[in-house]
Image (cartoon, rainbow, N blue to C red; front, top):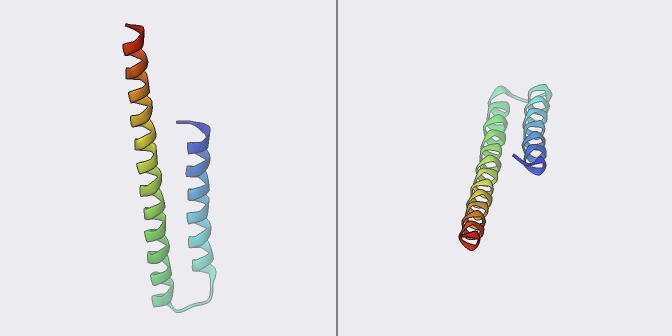
Length: 74
């Protein structure tokens, strides 16, 4: 995994942990806190899915480039 990918994952994880901690320590009703946690986890899931999709596309593109280069060398 490249450096940008590692930074993106670390930033996403930090954002998730910070969001959860902020919600847990905020004075609010239990039901509202649980809803906020659920909403936050849904957003995090969406971000991770987007990053994985982007990673898949990048890997596919690199594989195609390598196949093309291999064909040119043959």
